[in-house]
Image 1: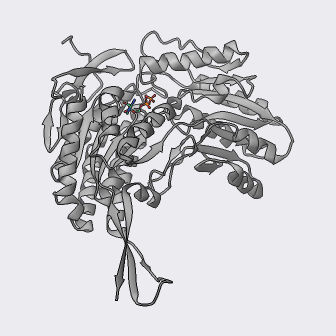
Image 2 (image 1 turned 180 degrees about the horizontal axis):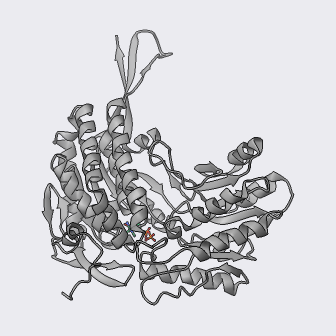
Image 3 (image 1 turned 45 degrees about the vertical axis):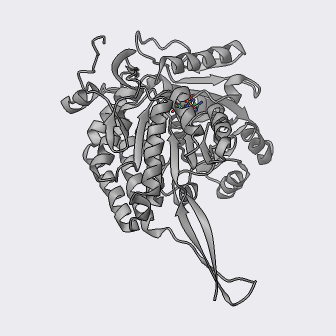
Length: 500
Ligand code: ADP
């Protein structure tokens, strides 16, 4: 193996973990892949290999699913008292919180995001998610139902865990996406095989150690590392899996649906977006500029709900575009672990080329660059400058397709009917999120109703909370993450009727 390069700014604890012999959690044991194969993990700030992790394939998937099946059918977890399950979830939250700095370092190193952001966003939101779902464990209940069929019946529903769940997650918020998936499924009493994203396996592997330490019974959570085709596809297709919960691209979401058809396993999907941001002329311009810049540039635009289409009323268009471009130009690009970093590199070489390709395609189709552009000026690492494009039209690829990078298309609109701008905002195959900026209460609510999106923010963007359901209309997905609603993803309802 070549000498591995580790960032000198990492704490010794994190450096030791990164250079340790990485193992997957299968059936309560930390194991290598059955084949012995591993694959490299990169530091996006340098492009260098930092470590290797096991490459799971069909055989490993089968071992993990078999363990989860056994844990569900015979193990204590689904039969445990809800308060005991809740206590385990709370313990996981405490342990993650205890290791907050370490998780933030791993996230920054592996994904590229600023350490300063990971420690106030990714990790605390992860802790919140486990705590919030810990509370739900004791509050899952059915109903008693009066029957029109007659008085002499007693009918009620039971809400039961759906069974063995396959969870497949992406690389943009590696730890948080694991928490969004694991916490509700555990609260419901399911058992799980979690496949981490191949680009960012480190925080999930560290989380696996913590899950083990928190006292989860054997086989309840299995954590595997591997590629989409090699590990994700056999997991989504596995006959012993009852449900697959996926977060990732719309393209792969469609493959998951096909793979799930074999045994008609239940499917929920949290997919792509092309979220509109609509700015009316009465909005508070200072907060619009900061807020709409953050809507697209937060996490380097690598958010499924990134505000990537900026519709601004013509009266304030120049002011807003100049303001957002100024914010973009001031953002300091640096490795995530550099204390001065405001924006790190994109996650991978593939993602870098994809995003630069989109910027070039926009320019090729006639868009003007108000800030940023295809050249980052940083000599190594997968950096892309925050970019503002104007002079676009609705049919351009940059306006229609999800870029998943720090690139926003700003478009003016005039004093036409409000309905016309709602129509333009809805002119996409996606429907994940949107934001509206105005001081006019009635207008804000009217637009919120008209937008076909699972989340609408008013005078803000990217506000998340464990209590808020999140998910997509149209091709942005099926089902909801978080909030009470996510429990529906992991429960099924049994109706029991007794003749008295
Ligand atoms: P992105 O394009 O952002 O990398 P993907 O949708 O490709 O997102 O990947 C999200 C997750 O889906 C990752 O864990 C990846 O390994 C997994 N994945 C990719 N292809 C497949 C597939 N054919 N079946 C199951 N999982 C897959």
